[in-house]
Image (cartoon, rainbow, N blue to C red; front, side):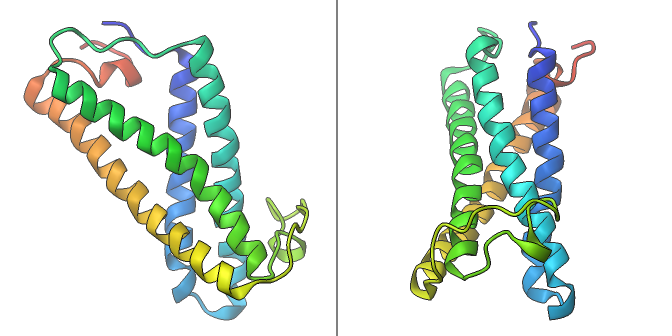
Length: 179
């Protein structure tokens, strides 16, 4: 069975690591004391923007190195489900950082100073504070975050299904090793 390219594997696992930083940091921000929130915002927002860059690079990589085809024995409904989950994940991994960046600016807190990108790079402020817009965009961003978690659960469920029940070696396409 064909494996994903080494670059595709790197993009995949880097995205996983960044999501493991961004999502929990974003989830707990509302529970953190005010004097400690800036660090969580910096981690969350910086990881989110890096996710955007990694996903865009990953999509460019996919044009040059397409994923290996699924084996013929994978039924059409499973193929469609896998494609739907992957497409939705890519779309949300692009949309989420954009929504977050808009919300941050609309709240009047562009990524500057203490909350700069990676803690050191000020990003341009592109709008004045607009609380009505900020609330709407932040709600969409929050819903998107939960949707990503749901899609990741479906993705992991598919991995487990293929590995433990179908035993068809699909997992080895991403991690390598014997099927």
